[in-house]
Length: 268
Image 1 (spheres, rainbow, N blue to C red):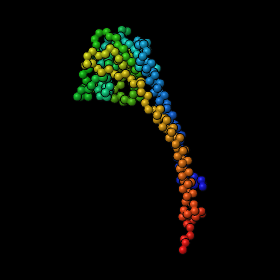
Image 2 (image 1 turned 135 degrees about the vertical axis):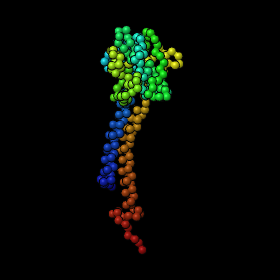
Image 3 (image 1 turned 180 degrees about the vertical axis):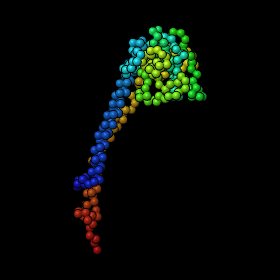
Image 4 (image 1 turned 45 degrees about the vertical axis):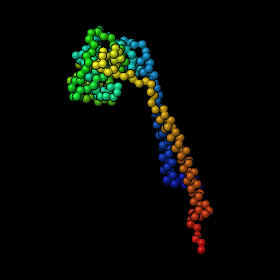
């Protein structure tokens, strides 16, 4: 009674099931690895945010590529803001998802080198091509504290680096690009300002602390995919047994068909 599994319909159904099982198992591991990466990233953010601040010059230098282990590392820098070469970064969102600009101001260090400081978010004006109103940076020598971030590229950020932008507007925060304008060495990466807080309510809105508490639903998705993979063979067995019962019922006495599968003779 199980020879029906060799029919074309059942062979196709079985092949589909055999393809679905490893595919669902693989999708489950994909979500599991995403969960592991999120947990590791949260631990890295937590460790770097709570570590004692280091001078930024100890962690980066001109042309240096900030490694992932140093992302969000708490750093300090002392120098004078170079507001003449301040630029704004287009298409950036505030903490409540409003679109505007990030204010990027070079901080010139005592040795003549500079480090880029993201001072925070400001709203755009009525004309997106016009330079927005930007609160002035503190004058004189200042000591800032913030989070070390890597240079942005189109590949790492997903943001297209457009050409022909209005004066003093950029798409990416990139130390190599700004070094060409400043005509002086610029430390690799940049500082995302965390302190001191802007003076008064008119200052740029500080960039929010990166989320390092949420782990997302990747683990739940992984378990779901594995349950689906387990359910495929179970469902296949259930369907086979149901088909067997239906065929047995079709040839049983009184079912309207003979054991040979032919109609019973009519009676007078």
